[in-house]
Image 1 (spheres, rainbow, N blue to C red):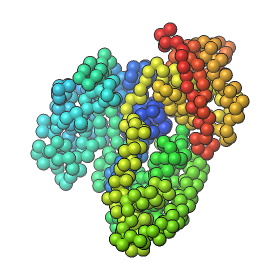
Image 2: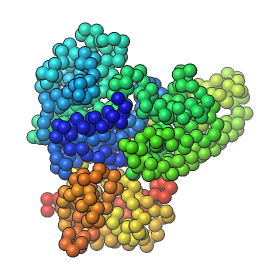
Image 3: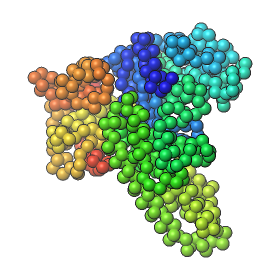
Image 4: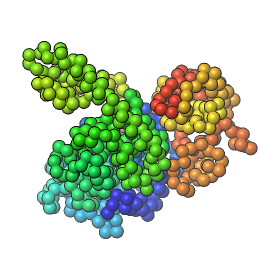
Length: 607
């Protein structure tokens, strides 16, 4: 079974269980300051997991592209990926543990679906602690579908408890594992007794509590189920492969790398690792740049992560002996392999290749600068009788000039030096800890904070976008937004800095709509109806899908200011927002501008 077939079968199965197929969303989260990228299929569904009604109903299914970069430096082994696909299904106050577990097991083992060997499946459930009891409901549901007792591992909260954050929705989960060892698993073997030979393929999260404080859990009136299956890992298992990189998901990409490097994958483990890193990082970079809200390389946020991915791929290309710019060539293989599932990659092909080529050329220039700086340092280094380059010097070359440690080691060796690698790691660790303290909350995914203030900001982004279009023209299109309780950030396409007069005009226009106390109305309609009514959207959803359309202004004789396809949340009328002020307008990346704005005052949302 191919990945395309697995993706289709999953959706087909859950549609047969009365789940509505919805569109996967952008890799760039909207109004979620807790993460830089969509790290799980649940992120776009945050408002609905918190109580909003979804236009498609209470049973949903989709496939979602995701990026996780917390362990970016570990990518290169046979299974770790920064970019991957999640197959998901949700129950929003509909069915719960018994049905969810039954669905999962049927899809995995039924001859009509994946037909996996039940003897090679084991599960984990929450063992219970001082906060919540053992999840007997999930355990009994597993037993009812035929799971033997010795294949159920009861593990602590660190393994089998999901939480949105220190407070808010939370609950136990059950994880599904498949045996990847030789033959059949020994009697009594499960994830609890043998973690090495059991690979996780599916996680079912049961949101049944609200954490009020550290010691208080209150049952939620409406319980939700959020599940996710890793497409690449499951595909690997179905094909009996030992690595995700041996499946057709990656083989066309690896074939292109082999051609460019004149190297046969599988010949040398160290070079194989470089091939895997290039394959993963180039794929992730193509998905990030080619996204409907695609970002470009920069020194901050998601753009910085993208830059790291590209530059790490280039470094490993150099290790394989690829001297010319090559990522744009690999991008063609990635786009060809995934354009059926993600049409935006083909649409944005020129942009993807252009950005990759520009960043690759820039990095090669950076490397030359780093080498020149090393040569400047050399006379002083030669005075060291121990011929050791300190970790601090090596890290400064890396942090300031982007010069990789391994290249400093190579240059050092040519001049009889060794590098204090432990000192380098210590300097890097200190820098990372400082970065994390400055960027608190970005590294951990979860439900974004939602409050009256963020709701006001969210509605204000609609007013801002329409005001920008009115003042600057139709070339303006949203490229992303980020909201917290202190400010809003809005990125949009525009080729030049705004003038002071344009900024003032946009600000005044937004405040005029707020003071006019326009009603904010929501209606559910099909995507085609939304288009016909002139609603603004990226329109990447599937044909015929129901969407929420928010209209700001009186929807009579087209007398409205803004009409947009959006998931929410929103105020009821604009006077609730308060005073709107643009604090800064600046460049975000090539062809993209960024506005930072604040609001103050306004009415409570219930008035």
